[in-house]
Image (cartoon, rainbow, N blue to C red; front, side, top):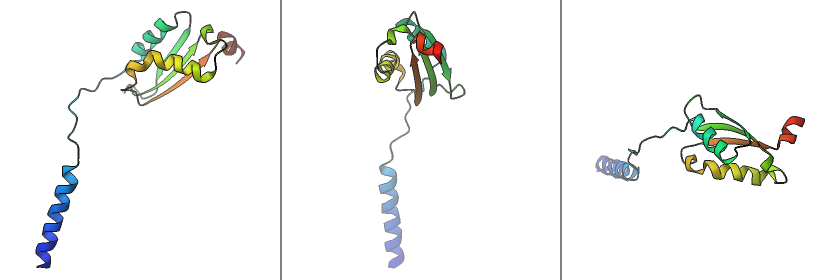
Length: 111
């Protein structure tokens, strides 16, 4: 009797565990490329110096972005980053991590 109860309990737990697992997504994985991000940012800040580096060894999930532009003059760092994030928003669903550095030309030349 105890063996039968243990088997039923194990089957119940197995059904409970696996029924709650979501099926594997069949959606296509889209890789974000450095040049795509660079082009988008360059279009938004045409007078700026843009640097985009894929820090994920070509996986397209981690990026270091540096933007040097005088349109950041007088803006706080958080607002500068928001300006860049707004430009790359269409890609953010595929990106795991970004590091954004923003400078005015005067700030960049003095550092």
